[in-house]
Image 1: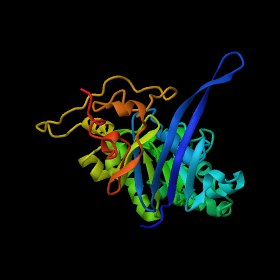
Image 2: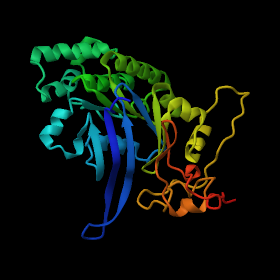
Image 3: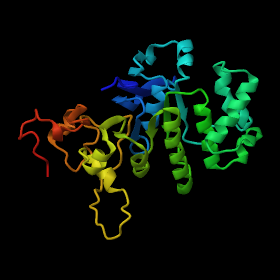
Image 4: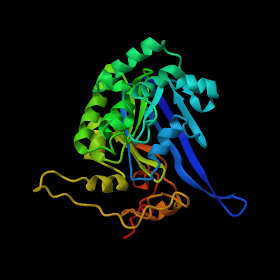
Length: 334
């Protein structure tokens, strides 16, 4: 198999909790807690999970928009966590992001031409005339008109703004784009247009995506492989068909059981999870999911499961698939 374009090893991001009169550290929020995965060139990796599970923080930590606490991120064989500011700035031509909120991610005081051409200006690409021409071409590529370049963000709808965000990400011809819930703020009809646009652009510009979302149907539509996160940890990772047809982790099964079925005659068994998601500032010992897991065992409460391959290209972090445990140890509690 070809060498992966992106390789994430043991990525962690902890945020300090400060309290008291002196503002001393009193704890930490484990937003991303030991996440590892790879992305191959031309692939779309979907990352799903409940709100607050660390999906967006993972994406921003990979790009060093947020500095990771620990771990390694290899892009094209180079560990970007070790790079200085100037080296990182040059590498950002290959690494771009499409933000979740199309309203907050565009500067309301700048014209669309200035917003889309800014990456070109920062990286010293072309002269003023060529940059203007590039902006017009990019706007037409994402389904807008060249004359829109003179307008301001408030003159566009949410879907149009997200198209502008995509044009800005494409401006420097990146190789990897992290899509941070790019359609969650949009109407369903506009979502499909943006997803189809992103698929077309992937083929046209030979892009690689990490697609972060909490809508399982959206992820299934666009992804090649899907990773499921829970409380800052990756709990399952495999091809999309394998994940949707034969999920292994109890949390993945619960998520998929909540997806509405369009056929009213088809009966699906819903897995109801008890309790609330634990706080990432005080995660449970052992497996983070054991407090809500319908298949919880004694070992789950004390030992954290390793993220291991249980089948060809199918990785799961669950003691149910740990062959080293004895039959006695894996007796499910009733």
